[in-house]
Image (cartoon, rainbow, N blue to C red):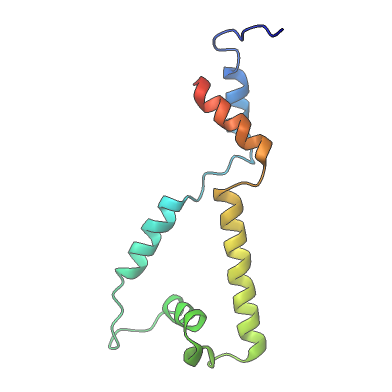
Length: 110
């Protein structure tokens, strides 16, 4: 038999969880969308100065431009992009199932 929780009993726990350094809101899918839109609005034209960001994206996307780097360099670039993707996914979708359950319960209680 369980006893009903007192109203507000979880509030101190919520405050501690929000203050936890593992609670990372520095990136979100919405922020990614906004950054992508800003990147696209650079509207690079052939007469514009080429930026490393534009060229890096093209190298990762297009095999002809990928030839600007040797195989080892392309592998490093792809590996770094994969690491960045994995870190983004960890931040935006933490793998901790128990943490997600607790977070969902806390959201309902507040």
